[in-house]
Length: 224
Image: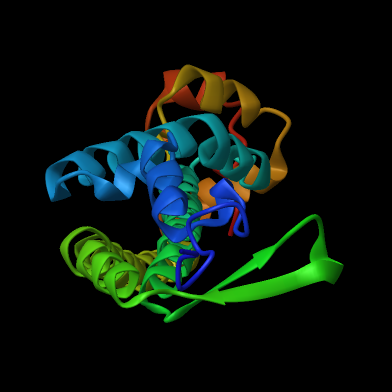
């Protein structure tokens, strides 16, 4: 006798069967992270954060804030960028796992035989619906909830980071007025000299030393 539905046999391609889509997602190097315990996913997200911060975000922030004394602005800007990348990753995980979850919960299975123009659907049998529902509740739903929790936490961190970055932009630049490289640059950089003068509320600290004043060429010491 023919089965009640062709779902699970030749009608639906193997790669488009919900249970196989779940297994493929589980074995994916990226999507499989979400199926780990909370500590495992957190560890991998922290690794991504550190890598993104050091390799991408901080160099970009350094190219934006090129003047001396803007280390705080660089760090806060890079932090915002790294957390934003983390949220983008979590969004991708959410879309992938949410898609498989909806396929497992559906009473029907939509599929494409050879392309987008020949789509069809099959009705799952009662046993298939129970199997897929159990798989969703026991394996997929906890993953979806975990991703939502991390995404919410990441969103809060991003808002806090943006607020911190805004405060850093309004803060005065920080720099060591006795750093040899800074003092040497003061000989020809009037903007840096003006910044040093404003930072010291009228008179840079190095102006009180004849030695450091000589190294800096007295630049910034004569501002009124």
